[in-house]
Length: 253
Image 1 (cartoon, rainbow, N blue to C red):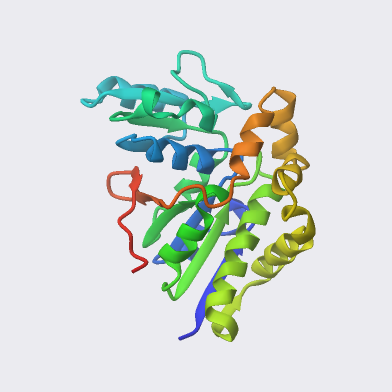
Image 2 (cartoon, helix red, strand yellow):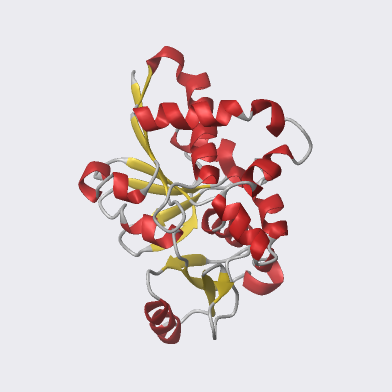
């Protein structure tokens, strides 16, 4: 069976209608995707992604579950929120057994483009291989990169390329890619030598605009954390009805 894999380097380069009925992997390496994986792995009950700060505050105020507010604007923790968007903050002692209401500049906006999708999962380097296993049998997969402030992000493109390469290894000649997928896998392969070195992938991520932004606000450590490939065997999945992200049931086997 032929498998179609499309990469969209920005949410604005696709539409909700184009993603309708598809399996979509949302990618925001620095940092929403990485933080969401860390939070659920640390025992958070669920994550509610919000577009606006006031919306997040309202949901948290009306929540019947133990709830914390997390998110950022310009990379920094929002006034009055419990945590920002650093995976270092989302550890068991902070989030286990709690609901997280979450808003970020890029990642939560990308999720809105998936309202009509059949299935939406969250991808990061820290769960890359598990994402590939989870979606690998789907006939049509769309990889949606969040970007940075409506511009293409190198780190998201590299992860999209890494996912495409793994899927190619499984499907071989039975996989059909769009041009953006070809560009992404080309970018991933172009850093092959460097990523094999200790901290090589982190160095590549640090060169991106998103990486430079984190360095500028003293969050270099988050780049190193985001570059830990396959740290977790868990896939966050968005329930489009409840608009909540939870750890997915394993569909790979």
